[in-house]
Image (cartoon, rainbow, N blue to C red; front, side, top):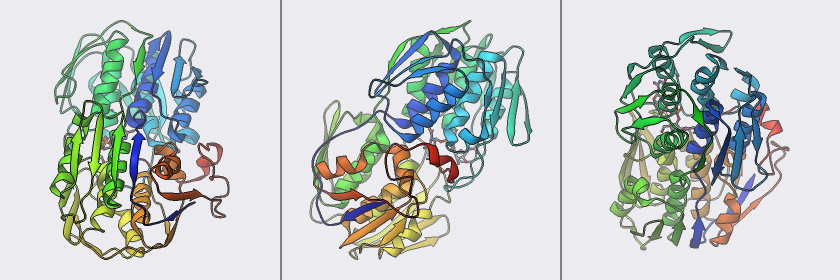
Length: 442
Ligand code: UD1
């Protein structure tokens, strides 16, 4: 668990890692590439290790001996089965479906199953791959996909809550090696999807329209090894920016792309936070008084759903009434009940959470329910009176590299202690025991 003594304002510089949500689909896409794929800025996370294990289980060679890099060679990867034991640890395992199908004409991938942030179907992934000519069926908890020859087609990936990020990646990789032209309508525009597209282009794919809802792909015969640097993690950057704001601190974020964070910085500015940026840095400086705000998570360029919980923790500290809504995962409010235990006033009203902030939070023993909920609890604990114990922090290790080291360098008082409830999860990264736990992704 993390033991956090609240009260210190975060001050100083912090360097952001490469983006988890780009690294995972790009590593998966390497299955469809011949020769060495050299990736830089790969974050040292439990999820990245799980993806490494998944690729290795499929027969790929993955060398992660150099920090923050990965060299993947899938030339001899003959496997096409992504086993439940690995997939259940990490939802993003579904990203191997498109690459396996493109590479072998067949794939058998365990269905990821339920999750703590809400209903997470994969119907749009299947719809997209079916449009390219794949034959898909669900059997014994697995998606079984076959295609003698993938063929380009037009497909619309819009769902009830927008497009699908990993679904767009799956269809894009399959289409890159299909015969003829594919047009993806309602493609996800998230920067991580663009990064996957750029990776594929470096490997020889012909893709245009990245970052727009209409992505066009002209199939090629093969993709060949290339080098790619993973883009900075906008969710990690936003988490630190929100933490600095909540503690009335002042920090400089290095290795960021400010344009990926506009919705977040606009929301902070509306609360009266001073935000300034250069090409790859962001400065956050907080006045004594902050204004409440209404936050609605939406697909990019909206406020990311992966920052909604962190914003809720921040708003719980700001005097006045704020409203938080999640337009991507409408039921993603598990963190609210733990924040209540720290003294926050949060009420669910319809599809929103109404936060009446301003009462000082008090340290408590709380339980993390998913990755970003954990980050919200850390933020609340940093602002609280007294000491908090945050349990089940294996969620944090899935998505934040060296979080306590970084926070302590900014002046926080955070230590990792063994937790009898999770005796094998106290060191990051820790992999083997995760399979025994419920996987929750974000
Ligand atoms: C990715 C991110 C996750 C983020 C999410 C939304 C990775 C590894 N994970 O997850 O951190 O929270 O995007 O930005 O990149 N949906 C369907 N049918 C589908 C697929 C999705 O209805 O086939 C719905 C989902 O229930 C959700 C919305 O579409 O309401 C967006 O989900 P999606 O973009 O697919 O999330 P992931 O790609 O799984």
